Length: 381
Image 1 (spheres, rainbow, N blue to C red):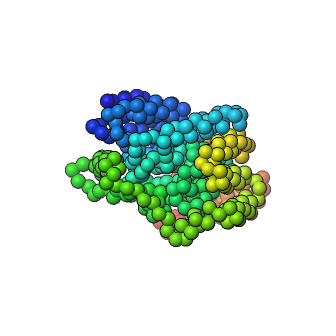
Image 2 (spheres, rainbow, N blue to C red):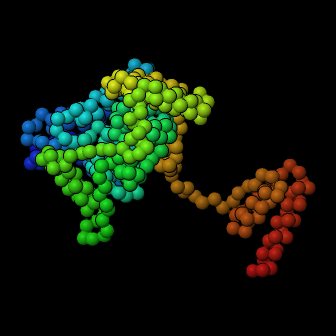
Image 3 (cartoon, rainbow, N blue to C red):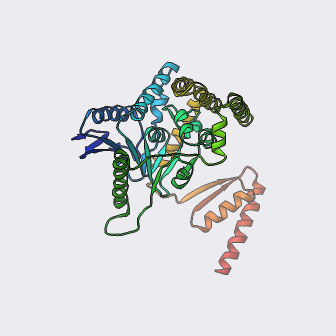
């Protein structure tokens, strides 16, 4: 069974199905086409009785999924439209999470934003332990909050302290750190040089490890037991007590208010949505997440931060063509200390230099100073 579609290629093996994610961009990003194709193929796998389990991995060595396409967020012009986008993303993740067939995420490269939320929806996460493999939920840096179930699934997988730290700061962590906090279940160590290129060999090793994990899950040889370490386990237990839960989230809200001074609403919404999920369950938490995402995606803070992010990304791409003609002359305005210094260095490097100033006396002083320095250099040469 092979689905060869524009956004994703799915291979059906004897008992295991592999989903290889690859889009036309340099990194895998989640746009509307990606989500539609992925959901279609996921349903095909679920309905196929010959497929017993699913492995999700990337066809790009440096990118699992780098997050959602900011263009689809920026194109939302109303709260209802942005809320619907979040609900659509949640539906995809819920389809993975509620799938009666086990799903393993095999991660090599950036796993950020929606990519991490997709991994969170899987039953097991295996990752390459390399510098390229990083994890994070950077939505808060765009004035947003995770909108595909991340605010609910992350605190249920790792400690509330680590969860809030990741969501409120938007920072990224390494694969080894992700393993230590319980975000990743298993690491695959990168191999040295050999007959194959490192990347090709690593992808095969990652796939082999993921398929083996999946088969162990199917045969019940592998039972996943996730336990928090002290003091995280104590905090997790205390959160079941309403009084402590209220005190903790009041503390977090006050901490956020102190840092943002009320000018940055996204962190407050993250705290409120996580609290809602703890109090009323994941269903109500997801609804609150979608509603808050809708509010934030259409806020002026989010629009401005996405615009800034887009401009920064364009600058990094260096879209400007190389200069066809190298300059041979230049003009310096101002014959002060700095202006004379620039003129002097320019002359010494072969540029025809024009020094300008409204003060004729300053020009004369500058000319004498430059001449003296050049005479000294000529004498030394």
